[in-house]
Length: 194
Image (cartoon, rainbow, N blue to C red; front, side):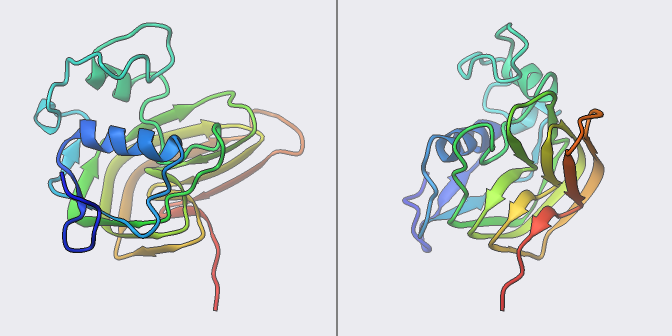
């Protein structure tokens, strides 16, 4: 729903909407000049947060070789696809995302043995504005040569306002020489300008 304007933002009303938003950004839409708003709190472990927790329409998201129901896909294996994932071309989110003082609970991401750089969190890479979002009871695990991990955002070159994170965040080098891990509660790496 919505047109993406400030007065009529795109609305995220389910986990399916959040996943479709992630897929859209990963596909090359940076949402620059557009607005997105979370309408309700979402819990990846609750059937009530899905339009249909048993849908298989999104395919093998968790990359285990089996298409399972959506709730299982998002809470096992690789889990949720960060909104911009460095495993694809680095397309940042460049719009305005309002969490609308809502919660995203039980976000699960587990990226092991990925190639190249990995930005992970609810958002992988942000050059826009993310505000008023509360990520709670998250479980985020990543392993790579270079890892940027944060509950809200892996790499932030924009603004993150009035947001918080609780849960478990782990980044592993896996014994790889010349590896680097950058990890923070809100953002793994944050560029400060001005």
